[in-house]
Length: 335
Image (cartoon, rainbow, N blue to C red; front, top):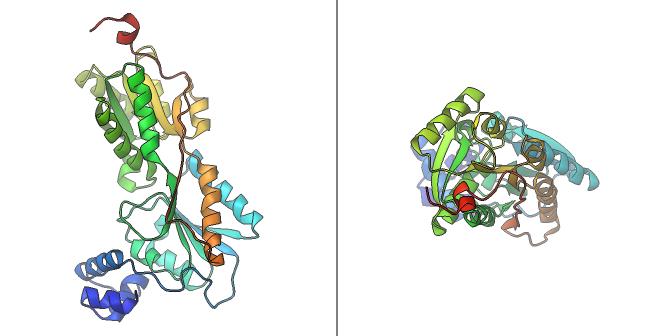
């Protein structure tokens, strides 16, 4: 599949496809959308993606990551740096805020031999350019749409199934999933979105009623969100906190005993779960393992090794003090 095939399918000139990918000239929104759809549908990739380009290798790996700071993000970057250093590679950190122009600056000047992309959704405007790069790309987090790129991620289907099963086994029948609107809106971290979708499907299979409750990150917003939640649905006996950004505020403003009144499960870094006033049952994000594996998958592509399209890590559910049988289960009576 070549750029000419993409141009033919999109009904445009090959130069137009190039301009969509390199951003050197403005292209109308309709034409850009048509070209990007054809790139995805045809799975366009340069033929020399899996081998080093004719230039001299720089031994630099690019890491394209969202802005912001979270424990899992810091651990991922640290693990990627360690893994790269052990292979005599340097790590160049880019942010999503640099946009398409920043990506092209790093790639066109041959700064990075390969690129690791952290939590870019399939709708990201940079995705067609990533798919067309002439060097290895590894996605950390499975995009919403097929990209034909190597990916590494946590198996959120299994994680959600274990979390839902744990709550059902304790007698819970109605739970709420709390998340940060900032994470959802900005796309700063994709795992909450992927986990929530999987959890809702797993809960439905087990007869567990789920209410989705997004709220902003501030303590005042979380307090208001929780007050509204329990006023409107007092039958809820479990909370699943999909983002570690709001976990501390949830525990502070819950206004109920954990786990005597309400059980809490979080998708978060182990350090966050352990530092909480009540040690939280959690689906830990294996950031360190993901970081090392992403570096390995990027470098293996230079050796023409067979790299799996998607590599999913088996998740764990770490049961701590924040989950317990419901009051109904303990008393053996119905409300």
